Image 1: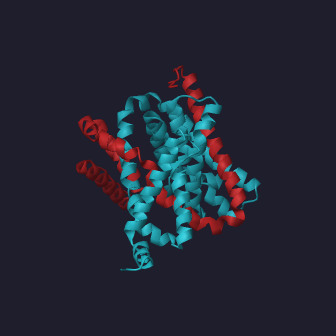
Image 2: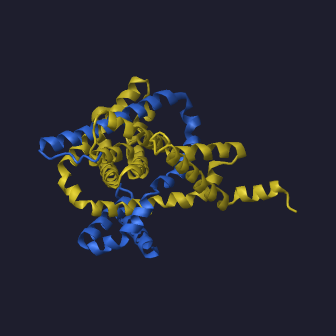
Image 3: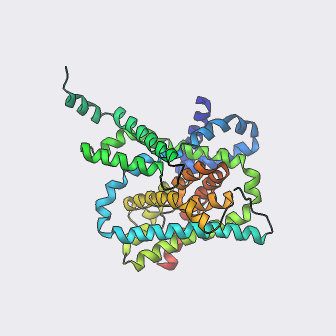
Amino acid sequence: MILHFGLFLGFQLVGETIARIFALRLPGPVIGMILLAVLLLTRPKIGTAIEKTATGFLSHLSLLYVPAGVGIVQYLDQVSEIGLPLAVALVGSTVLAIAAGALTFKYVNRLLGVADETPL
Amino acid sequence: MTDILDIWSYLAEGQLLWLTLTLMAYLVGDGCFRLAGRKPFVNPVLIAMILLTVLLKVTGTSYAIYFEGAQFVHFMLGPATVALAVPLWSNWQKVKNAAVPMIAALLVGAFVAMGSAVAIGAACGLRGDVLLSLVPKSATSPVAIGVAEAIGGLPTLTVALVLITGVIGAVVTTPLLNTIGVRDYRARGFATGVAAHGIGTARAFQVHGTAGAFAGIGMVLNAILTALLAPLFVQLFM
């Protein structure tokens, strides 16, 4: 467990370092994730070993957004005058983007003649 | 015996209290979520946020003091992002098979997220740096901050817009996709990750492992795409 956690942190560290060295606009953790994925695809045994830790950790991903979320109040004063148009833009665009993305996935899949993976 | 107020002021300045309360607020939120039969609008992040916000107001605690304690939870976002490599690996066959619809959904989802936010915002009278701050709001926050700086938006406003977008996405995605009849967990998760980054991904993991894996991929791909395309989008359309 500690070893697995160390692996995640280690890849984040490598990712941050690469982002700095090459002045990339991608965050270190995203680079770390891509590198870890490459490692797992070439060394599946490591994947099997860390799968349980990762699944447990990710099942509480929601929790990790709470501290930043509480910070929204910080910006409420700044936003209050333009709050309504911002809210309309955010709700509208999020609904449209999810719908457009999901429908595109579905119909491109159909065009390719692949069956839906119907779960329900 | 020490006065209770002395004890409070000692604890309220320290990290332990706000770290503990962050975990407890989340447990309350998660408990409500389970009690409500895992309904999407009973979002644990949203409930925890509201509880803690009220608590900070009532106790007159600043966000800076709160974050001293809560930063330990916040810090875990980094290793958690790295850990998304694991569901990506374990779903690799599915990912490979769905490469074409994923790329199409990424391009459409990312473009609609940016375009519709700006179009609706402009129609509602938003202008200038506020409007520009809306462009990267579907990307994960570290990317969005960098993009906002690069295109002349307001980075702090962008952070708030990113988080609110995530919460909206997490709340609306299930009823929305049920209504428009998309039942495939890959499509559902992926579109949610593209439009609502990590908070949407967290919601997808609550629903189904495959949805979570695809949401994580959608988040990462949209982070890359937004970093590359947002400046171009602004040049072309704004």
